[in-house]
Length: 194
Ligand SMILES: O=P(O)(O)OC[C@H]1O[C@H](OP(=O)(O)OP(=O)(O)O)[C@H](O)[C@@H]1O
Ligand SMILES: O=C(O)c1cc(=O)[nH]c(=O)[nH]1
Ligand SMILES: [Mg+2]
Image 1: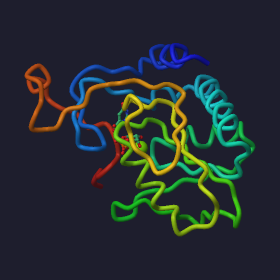
Image 2: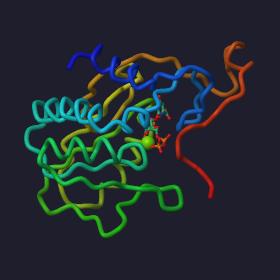
Image 3: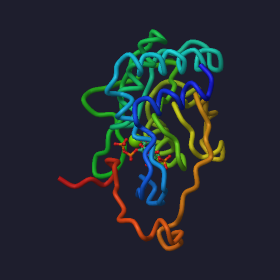
Image 4: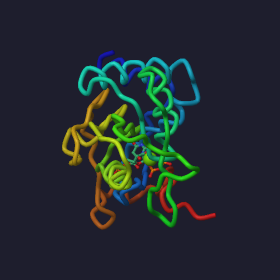
C-alpha cells in the first residue's frame, strides 16, 4: 500500500477534515485526520491494518503483543494484532496517566509493539511507552497509520508509519489570522470531563 493509497482511504472515508482544531498536544491545526471515520468501516480498517502489520513484521520481526493507547489506538491496535497473530491490549488514562487496567498483562519475554492511530507530536506515544516501562516484555518499536509530524516526532523506539505527512501545527498564542477567525473544536479524548 503506497502513501497515496493510505490517503485515498482517508479521503474516501471523508476523514480529512478542514477547520480549526485543538489537538491532543494543545497545538492548533487547520487539518484533522478523523480516524474514527476510517475505523467505522471494518473493510477499510482491515486493508490499512493488514498493510501496517506487514510493515511492522518487516521491520521488527515477529510480535507477541500489540499495546495501544486508548481511545484512538484501540481499533487499529486490535486489527493490526489480528494480522500479526498477536495479542491486542490497550492502556487507558487513570487520573490522566496511561495504565494497563482490566487485568491486562504482558508475559515475560514477550515481543511488544505499540500501535497508534495518528502521531502528531509523539506525546501520546511517549506516554504510552512510558507506561510500559515497569511491565515485562521487550518493546521493539512503535507503529502508526499516519505520522503527521513529517517524521520529526521523537520516540524512544523506532517508529514505522504507513504514511508520513508534514501538517503544520500552531501554538495557541501564535495562530495565523485565518485560523483565529474560526471557532476551535477539540475532537480527541484527552482531558475529556464526565
Ligand atoms: O502525537 P500526539 O501529539 O500525542 O497526538 C496524537 C494523539 O492524539 C490523538 O489522541 P487523543 O488524545 O486526541 O485522543 P483519542 O485517542 O481518544 O482520539 C491520537 O489518537 C493520538 O493518540
Ligand atoms: O494531534 C491530534 O490530536 C490528532 C491529529 C489528527 O489529525 N487526528 C487525530 O485523531 N488526533
Ligand atoms: Mg489517541
